Structure formats: structure tokens, C-alpha cells
Length: 531
Image (cartoon, rainbow, N blue to C red; front, side):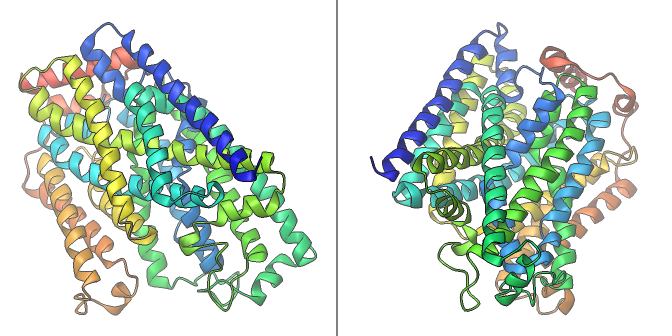
């Protein structure tokens, strides 16, 4: 039996088990008697997840293969300067999430736009929903492409073929079981990712030590053929000061308000468990999401050093092949390599299932529900079926986009800048009781328009009139979009109508515990709007 055949056996068994979990959750969802609550459950699950599970699920959802590949590529090309482009913003993100449960578990929204609805109004929800849906669609497309590119080499298939296979798999189990499927497959995928990353880290560093001669010789060996954009490995400002500052500014706020994280916080049993989960999340992320991929990238710089100042084929454009090349280089036994390839697949599926669920939720819950379902009293059964249909539709859209993939840098920077300039600014404004509904409108509109407008101006090289230190970063559009959104908040506070006593009372309101309480509180607050 060939190595490729063994890899396929592992892959088929794993993908089949994921679909089986989705089918099981489909019947679990049918056990919810109230049809409206069943449709609610599709997006939030049973609402009884313990804190450690929330953290594991969140870490799994954040083990985006594209993120990990990009993070490793940054270290491979910038050396220690990569900390400003990913590591620092990500760690700040995990710390920022520690402050979420205490305030926002009083606002029983499934999505961030719905949470903001209970602080501002329904229009805020419908304005932000499509923006988030677009941002996460870019991530979904990026993850599908990177997963397919990574797996296409060991499985010896075309990238497009691999993209269709994995999309049909995660699309099936998410469409069947909704967020329930995401939460349960996450545990398996988290275990897969942890084992694979630990194996590649340990054996990768061991191989780097063998080739360098000693642990202390690793950095000197790297410096013989240094990272492409650095003078040496410890070149901490290799990206350039303006690029470093702009990356931290436009990344960090968007990272803190990633929808997948907030969805899991709201799905946790109660606010205490949610707070505990965020502490677990700090540990999981620092060790598994940040430290291990960084060490793998360091090992890759020794095992697959740059050739003539260029990235070698084993690493690939944007680092697409680091994972698969490390697996096949370090593990000669096809059974071990096959198991690790499945673990790699699990790591990627934990992200794509999260983001197809988020894309569909932001359109269904935040646009169709307030504009159509609530207005025309659409039944719970129809809401659920529409949600499933929208989920399937986003898989098709992501596949089309993935086939026209523009590259990781534009995909991640643009979408992160957009989230920072819209979602993050609106969410952070909730910590102030002075923020008005006009503030939220202006932040979302100005943040969206500013980010897109200046992105295209920058790509067209029409920002020559801006200061050189800003345009040199290549991220001027993100900084300007964020500044415009913050300006919108300030203008809204001055000219908008102050929030009502009813809305302000929610800052001291009760927490919900479990899906049923959340569902009832959600309905009650919506009824108060019409009252």
C-alpha cells in the first residue's frame, strides 16, 4: 500500500467521523420542542458549556490553518520582528477577552450585532451584520484555500479538488447540527491540533539541533542565511516601525471582538464559567496558538533555510507547505505521517466550521431576522431551514472566492482592519454609558466606508498626499478607517440622543444562565423595543 493511499484512508475515516457527529447533533437539535427555541439553538447550542470546554473550543476555532501558516511565514521571513505583526496583537486579544463576560453576559445576543442591538437599537444590528459577514467570508475563503493547498501535496490531488472535498465535509456537519456540531467537533479537533503541533515542535527543534550542532547554535545557523526581510534572527524591528505600529493598532481591536470568541462566551453555562474559560483561553493560546507555531518556524529556518534570499519550495509561497513538508521530512513512517496529516486537517476544520457558521449567522440572525422574520412572524421551522440554506450558500461563495485567492496578506489585513474600525469601536463604546445610538451608526458607517475607500486608494497608489511614515506601513487604510470610526463615536456623543433609563438599567441587569434563560431574556428585550 502506497504512502498516499494510507494518507487517504486516514483522511476518509476522519472526515466521515465529523459528518457522523453532525448527523447525531441533527437529531439532538430536533429534541428541542419549542420550534422558535430550536432555531435559536442552531446558532448558540444548548448553552451549558463549561469554561474549560469553551476555552478548548475557542482555541480550536482560532487554530486557523491560514493564521498558523501566516504566523510561521512571518517568523520565517521577518525573524523576531514578527512579534509585532501577530504575536503581540494576539496575546493582547486573549487578555482583552477577560473583560467580556462581566458586562456583556447581561445583553443576551447570540451575535455581536445582536448584543449591540440591546444597547443601541435594531438598525445597529442590521448595519453591522453584513460587514461582519463579509469579513469572515474572507477568512473562510482563505482557510479553505490554505487547507486545500497544504493537503493537496501529500494527498496528491489538485487544490480545487481538495477544496471541494473539505468544503462538502464541514458544510454537511455544520448545516445539520449548527453550532452544536461546531462545539463538539472542536474538542476532537483541539486534541488533534495539540498533538500535531506538539509533535512538530518537539521533533522539529530536535532536528534543528541535530543540523545546527547544538541548541545554542540554532540562531547562529539561521543567521548564516537570515530571514528574507531581516538582517539577522533577532532583528526586532525588521518590518519597519510604521508597519509594526500600524499592525498592532489595526489588528488588536478586531482580534478582541472576533465573533467566534463572543459566540462561545455567550454559549457558556453562566458568567462565572465564561470568565474561567477566558483564563483557560489565555493559557491555551499562549502555548498552543502562539508558542508552538513560532518554534516550528524557527526549526523550519534551519531545516529549510532560504535559498539565495528566496523562500524554498518546501516552505512555499506564504508558507503554505511548512506544515506538510515538516511532517514528511520528520516522520518517515507513513502511518505516523498519515495520523499527523489528519491532525492537520482537524486543525483546519475547527476554523472553517466556525467561520461558515459565523458568516451565515451574521446574515440570518442580524439581517433576515430583524427585517423579515420578526416583521412577518416567520415560524421557527422556517427560520431554521433558512439558516441551514444560508450556511450552505456561504460555502459555495467561499469556494468561488478561494479559487480567485489574492493572498494571505490582503485577506487578513483588510478584514481585520474592517473589524477593528466597525465592530471593535462600536463594542468598546458600550463600556461608556454616554455613547449614543448615533455614535454606533456613525462608527459602523464611517469605519466601513473609510476602510474600503482608503484600501482601494492605497492599492491604486493615490495616497501620495499622506505622510510618508503612514503610507510606508502599507496599512494606512486601516489606521484611517479606525480614526474615522472613533471620530463617529465622539460626534454621536455630542449630537446624539442619550440612552434611555431602560437601556442604562441593563448595565446592572441580571445575567442569564443556559440557553432557555438566554432565549427568554432575548425575547423579552425585543418585546421591550416595541413597547
